[in-house]
Length: 310
Image (tube, rainbow, N blue to C red; front, side, top):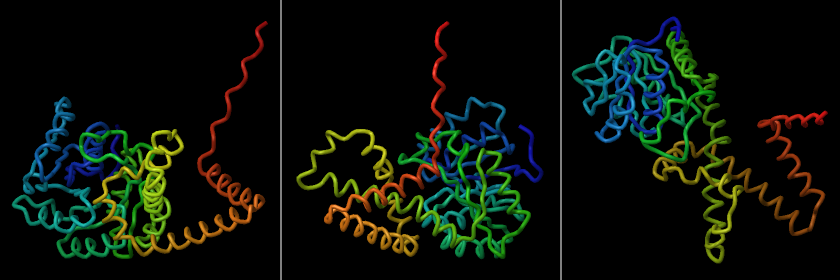
């Protein structure tokens, strides 16, 4: 693969979960940089990655529980830890005996940006580093390096969150970095990012969890034995890691709370329609939802009918 101007030479990833592990695999597969380092607290997920990448004998790859080994000479550090652990992890990497290259770029993969950017941007600036917030919109309800995939980012949106203090050259390099992995990049202010992902990621997770809690409780606890694809698909994300999601929801509680109030109003409207037997407004409500979703996810055209046999 041809390299883009300003490509990074040594990427350090912390840590090797689903996102960090998938990033390491994607870098190994696409080769946008010569050297990859992964840091993690436990040896087991690092061994999982090492086994997956080891067959690529010509790749400069190392996975370690040693901060110094992971950070030494890195010109890009990618934080793939939970949001609440990012500051501590970054400080440990920077204060290790093998610090990153002077002027290195730091980015993250967190799903909340307001608090992350406010905390990490000045920290990096004080250390002579350049921070660019980023959030690849990729993942699954699974967690851990054993579920990592080198195709996780292909076709995914990646939201970059520059501020007035963001270094322009670093922003362009991080943008190019994600595009080499198959992402479609977009730029949003941190606050706009948090309001957007509250709508399309955080609210759906809360609603899926609430749906499971409502549908499979009390007298309906056994109803799941009869569920088909609709229930499975609607509630899939409720299987995500509870501790991780609790942290995300609390970090973005402002935008999420506003949306939940709006959702409560819409549920109230539906109750009024049902209690009144108001078919017309019920059809209108469902039609608007269908039109908006169909516009977002158009159905592929139906296959052409087979021509008659001659």
